[in-house]
Image (tube, rainbow, N blue to C red; front, side, top):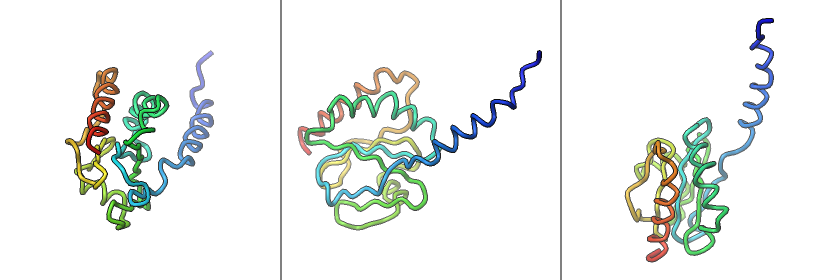
Length: 147
């Protein structure tokens, strides 16, 4: 009996719709939550962002890495998303991110408490993702030394 691949389409569309209804990130306000931050710049439909979040960012968050002097902020550059910067200026998240050189997703930014970059942005997801978490952990530890 031939496989009827189209019978699985409703399940695909339902799963896709459910994912689309979950917001990636809320408006981010750096002025009300001062301190150093690892900023995860992401957007809806970015499969590399999903991979980075599931395999690296969320496990690091669950480990308690961001309970000290460095916070984790997820910034979605989807249309309509806003960021309030360290000076209290509210702007489109995509504009805010591009000011730091984050033109694509995923991008990780290491920001000091005053809003300046502590290191060069980390772009994309490396093929050997196993050691990327360690690299981020080390960068956060360095940032915590001089927030």
